[in-house]
Image (cartoon, rainbow, N blue to C red; front, side):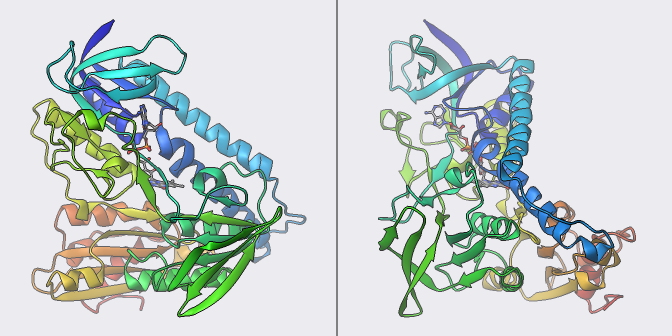
Length: 473
Ligand code: FAD
């Protein structure tokens, strides 16, 4: 039996399920096909479980230094199975929430593997979706007017570096039953640094090996430098400009050894585990792309600014199209795609307005151009920087490392980028995001009176610092 829909979405991750909700709000008859669990990578293997572990690590690390706060705590230990149990409960609760939202929106959820068919007896256009049902029932046949491909991504490894034994990706790391006493993290990007920070706070001996000449290399150079300093202060061993040599991997039952070429010299590293965090690979296989004219370039589906593929009724959003592989980007792309399908004329996304966060301890967050990017784009740049060391609330928290940096255009005075490292900056970056959306000047940010004592005062002071007028420096 074939069922007709206005929209069928392939993949129920953050991109897919949010798109489904928007479609239901706009009155589109919608089906969502998910082969695993609603919520996708973000909810089950990414954002939420990793942040739950990071929070436990932070509580442990803070409790260990509780004397600083005048609080005595003895025998502070980690019960990792309870840490994992807490993580599981949070994920379950949110998973139920997504299931509820699907019911509330009257969205038909098909649990199974979806595949796009070519022109068929059901439709002259490619896009009929066949679903191999997880429960073994006969394949469902969905005949949509429009399709959104939101099949996401999975971890990738270095060519020749096989995952297995003591070598894992973030997928396996999230399911670990105990904290390894030592770990090598291959890749010092966002995911690598979050894991490094967390495992170090849990007491593991951590080495990060990064190919570029600095960790978190897509962030502003000053943020990378400060992050590197603070990770080293935790005791993390950071090796940059290092090329890991997969062929040198040796595994025994209890540990793994691998070599890297570091500034022309081959060095060997040994630890109980190796975590490979070198990026993600789009899930483009097995979904029937070959039955369509959809283009795939460098592993990602190609779309226009409204997320239409070469087949104008088939859209693609989220990690499967590459770019900024973030949950909030995937969901926003889903909303734009659905609004376009519904003829609502949405604005294309300006990716330079998207905030990016790193949830290590300390956190980092940014929006807009780094200082170097702004210069490369030909802007005459002026900057303002303010340290959390002079912020009362940061001292109260006992977390005064880091700073806020604002990059502005000398000519128009517009804010081009804001970069932060320090306590709770991931919860503060949206003010900077709004400032960018509204084309605010540092003067306007500074004159948004920031309440005292708050961490956000650092943003007001950094804005004043752009004109050399910070009060507390
Ligand atoms: P996904 O969430 O990957 O969802 C795709 C879904 O499609 C999956 O559920 C999959 O089962 C399903 N699917 C695939 N093929 C088929 C098929 N043929 N039929 C049916 N279903 C199919 N982002 C942030 O913004 N903040 C963070 O803090 C953050 N932390 C992260 C931490 C880690 C460790 C990782 C790995 C990622 C993190 N991310 C974070 C990235 C974020 O998880 C992704 O950007 C986001 O999940 C992308 O959403 P998506 O909908 O495109 O894809």
